[in-house]
Image 1 (cartoon, protein in one colour):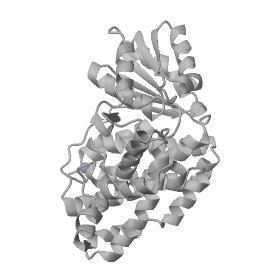
Image 2 (cartoon, protein in one colour; image 1 turned 180 degrees about the vertical axis):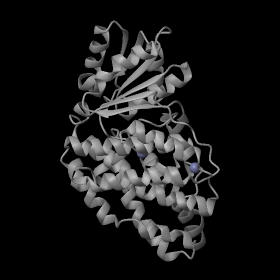
Image 3 (cartoon, helix red, strand yellow; image 1 turned 90 degrees about the vertical axis):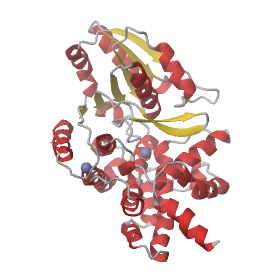
Image 4 (cartoon, protein in one colour; image 1 turned 120 degrees about the horizontal axis):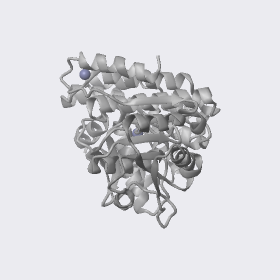
Length: 384
Ligand SMILES: [Zn+2]
Ligand SMILES: [Zn+2]
């Protein structure tokens, strides 16, 4: 089954799900194939879009942006381009400055905005599309993150990383010819973001049983299957082969859709993401260059796994036995190393103080009942 057929199956399962969650009907077109961007002109003409805006940066412009611009102009579409400027440190950041830069570049007559790039550009564009009520189209240039197909836009506003509800793409053109050209560190980051599902899924069980939070078995299974397939293909991903990158992108898209279906990041984001968000803010404050989201998540997952297995031993709460099923931390770091990603906080540039700061405060970033929250608020509080 191709992705669009699987979305139809997931939609049907979700509509019949009795978990109590609202389930969004996903109406996204997904093209994950060689030459996927060739479908863009047809999509625009079907939708009647004759004037669009394309957003890219210095790297993603040459990876795909310029080609998309030329292709669309040849078919008579009016195209405005926004080449995202970099900050003083040479980076495009998903913050209030970036939001304004996109906003200012979109003309009123533009009928849709096309994000060409990785997570950062997508998050800026999805927010602006949501505020300007314009359709959002996605051309990912790397299999680096699972946020492409979700509705949430993680943005740093006033120095605080927060996720804003925005809009999912109307269609995603994931062109394997483009994705397989991406640097291996981007694949490693996408793989790290997927590995993080081990702890996020376990944390979801804890959120349900200790926090009484909503739990959707359909979204849980979608994410679990995506994770399992990804790990089975670690070799192809490590070699950056087209088949490996395809499996990875497929998993990341599925993970994003699982969040979209229940309009919440629960399946794909637990304590490991909270640690990663804390590090991101601390690194930014320290003037450190940004580190890929998935690179931080992968390392955080391994670190948290040690804490969680320990918690499963120490606590009488039976729910924490779920952490016994996590792979060993050494297995997680072996996989990260195999795909060529960082395996230690040191390699991320995260200091021991930042590790400690995150372990003791990251649970305060989101209103979620995770093992990390329990460790801080019950276990450690009780031993003081
Ligand atoms: Zn993530
Ligand atoms: Zn459900």
